[in-house]
Length: 271
Image 1: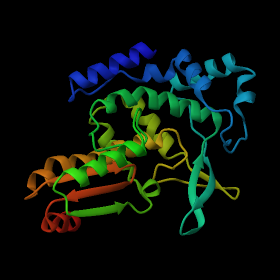
Image 2 (image 1 turned 90 degrees about the vertical axis):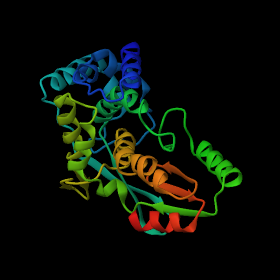
Image 3 (image 1 turned 180 degrees about the horizontal axis):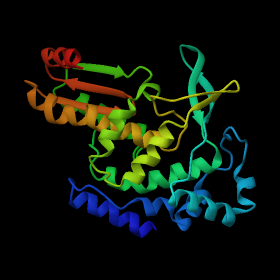
């Protein structure tokens, strides 16, 4: 399976405009599902059903065969995510998370591993958040070198308010279809996005957003912002600036650095 996914990445690099039409079988593959099970951290919080990795693993092969079968016949339905909160500076309630059931985590990981090689081949160098081999320290190092060594006098800093809670599902699907032509994968992701949130015993439908806490959310957020921000900056903003211009993004936080105040002001207005 690892070799197959490596080939997908190589193909994506060689043909950046290629639309992949046969991907779903990688997600359904029992060996891939087993590898995802093995990779999941048993210490992570459980979802609404309370099932742990240890409990799921007691009948692992039977559970994985059943899961694979449901995926193949499109009978798999992700359950609502359990709402949880972690401390967030400046927020009384905290940062909202959506905790998936363990079986849903397996499917999220299998989907992420299948799609990630395709997008890693096309993501911009300016994107650092939640990507293999990239870290906040690398982002800060690159930013520091740019400010010290380039002609930079003005910085625009931004954090997208409630980004993970407000992602537009329709636009998310449109962006995915630029590279993903396998409608079964699209349908699966739509089901994940719309699986709902369980809080205080009540299930709330999710018509927007891709909840933090989901294994797939960081990749989906990078795909969304690749088209909304990263390409816009590199193909429009940078080329239309009078002076030097640079951009760095980590998830929904980003910085744009400019030589001239006019370019910085214009960027902020257009943003």
